[in-house]
Length: 312
Image (cartoon, rainbow, N blue to C red; front, side):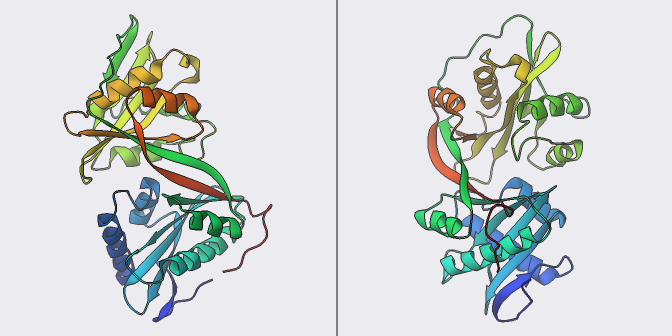
């Protein structure tokens, strides 16, 4: 385990170390302001701000914190995300030290799967991950399109009702559909009420941008949007879109995507979403709606029982 050091070293983040937490906050803000992409996932940022459900490692080199690695946990699965100040010297070395240390922390508690996420991965990122025993698991595409969408608006058939989400009423029904639609998804599946409530309590949450589709009185799907006012240009994101497996194959994804993005078109000139690269049907749908690829986020997978042991 890395030990605290006032010079050039890795520092274990302790919850009561206010000065270190403030230094990491400053790093996250500094790197975010110089990027057109969030430097950490929403789930990781929520954990960081709450101070629960993760292990943290900071890197400093005789001055301000210039790197931070966070190991999130969910049952026997861990997720590693790293923030490095690209303006500081030795960026690649800092990332490597943080990654090897984070991997050691993640494997210490009997974790069965460890995912490491990198935005806009390079050949160097691939080589580093593979050398440490990771394999490329999947690519997540970020797609963007001008709003409002130029696509023709589909008619809503009889028996179909589009309406907005009702906080305090629709949670149970929405969770059931979401978890059925994403049953095998490592991040989106198995949401619980606390996970949903966290998002509902976030400053960005707006039920007017959360569209539900009912068919014959039953919730069939939804499109939940999120407006990123801190981005330039302002982005209207399809945050979660899901269709209950019982209703798939009816073209509801197109109906819901258009309905959801129409709720944010007056506030965001650009629409945005994430989609798995190998989900060819969804990629084709969004391409027809006018979306093009902006960049890739890559997930690398390490399975301790199948990989060689690591040491920091």
